Image (cartoon, rainbow, N blue to C red; front, side):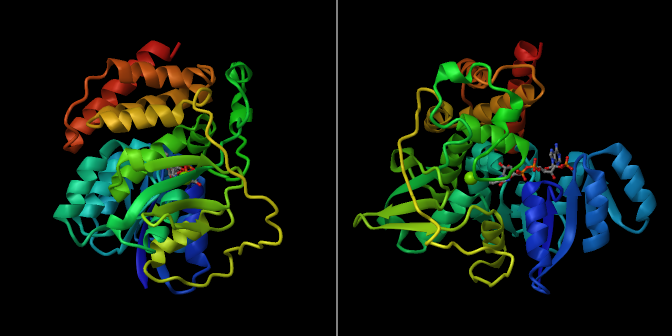
Length: 383
Ligand code: NDP
Ligand code: MG
């Protein structure tokens, strides 16, 4: 039985992960859960999964949970996430929080030598070089990606040797606004931007998908996770989201991973790897119903997310921290109705322009640059 801590159990990835645990009989045990504001759902999850440790980000929720479960080990806020990761008696830490707030807990999980089932892509974007150093220093620790593209690449890489890889081909759905031009994006509403054609996800990543910043973050995530040069990473738009990504080897053979667009599969794989297990809640792909698999180039002029990320990634050092932090605040401001959709790109571009990159070699510098960037965006755009 593998013991699992889920950070962000009340979110989209978190609830899918709990579905996997529930449908896997005695294969997994939940020992830790964390939620932020949604304490009602967290309380239901505590009743159902009976974890030993819980962390919550809402004061009201903290008081209620304290009262209802007096014997539970309960923690609060960012510190609470770290406390959960610092526990001894678990095997897998699923990082399903959205945003850079998940970095420190991931760091602690690695130092403990645990398996990190990594959904939180912001961690590898902002802290990739530091995380990779920690992985070398803690050889028992490992990261198994949950992001569907990276899970696909991870699985495809098993088909050859590292030095035989020619390039990674990351697929993108193209997002909600695929096919539109700049003029048609000036006044798009929050509701429109939140309608993803294929995937049901949290709000932040859904907006990131419609700007293609999500794909940009995934390019940096792939570079950091697999150690592949930016010159050997390509993005192709594949609107049906059936091929989740591919690896081309030196002999031009391409290995891809396919499946219905459902995050439960990569979540379960990150839990069971190197094994594969049957699970009746996982839906199979019926090829007689897949009538069309199409591919096209991304429209980089309209959707600048990928280009900006390649630029930040190639500059390296703390530039990806800035890209990520500026984007997080820009998305938050867009969701609050404070800025227009296209201003998200402007914010990222300007934040990157003003930043002088520093060595990205520890949590303190990452936190400092992250905070400085957020403050700059708030003070210039939160009107
Ligand atoms: P959601 O917004 O659905 O969930 C986020 C989770 O994090 C919730 O449990 C939320 O708590 C918690 N949370 C939010 N802010 C904080 C905070 N400041 N401190 C502590 N906890 C916090 O996001 P998703 O599940 O969609 O995404 C999670 C991560 O996985 C992201 O990094 C995303 O990029 C990545 N990912 C998601 C995919 C998907 O299909 N959803 C696919 C690939 C990657 P609460 O709700 O209680 O406030
Ligand atoms: Mg993805």
